[in-house]
Image (cartoon, rainbow, N blue to C red):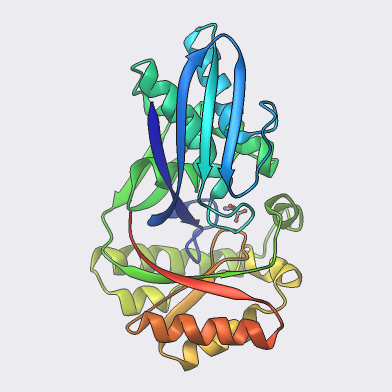
Length: 287
Ligand code: HSE
């Protein structure tokens, strides 16, 4: 059984742990067949091949356990999403492992698949959050109302965006550790206003307005020390015609909306270079 799972943009501005956008590319490809042993082989970006450290294999094992099937597997992973990039790389592999085994066993209960995928995601990020896995599973723009029971609102958003991948790493574990347990009420209110307006703007297909609603007061202020370059990158993007720009997930990937996405991508890559950080950009539709 072969599945492919795409990259995702979690948070999408003000939707910390709630919003997620599925991209068309890049993707991970995972091939699984049942076997007596457990074997994991990885091509492309480097991730662990030890079955208890590889997120896809942890998810696959979890799904087999949930289904009460005693079996091992041979798994081949073609890792196309850079790990620790902020593009849901671990979420995609985790979902891929669970999904491939679910397909083999003819299971399509999304909640079972999700539960298994979250086991894998936990290995990578320390805490199971669904805003990468769920949009990769459903496609489009997703509002994750609840993980268990799984309740999701989906908008078939039609937009293109530019994603910029700098050659720096931000650990999701660390990016979650720096978050406070409580936030000021005024910040919560500002986020609520942004998030609800953003959903309406997306529904209306008003991408310029969506771009103007990408701020966040729940996570970004506390993550600034981990992404000291962000303000300069944002300035460069806005000066070059971006409607708005934000961090993808916990970073370091950055995404921007606008008309001339190539120009914005080049400007952001240039701004990273001024910070002595190599970066590349690509343009993707919603997946
Ligand atoms: N919502 C998560 C976070 C996404 O911002 O920590 C991380 O991939």
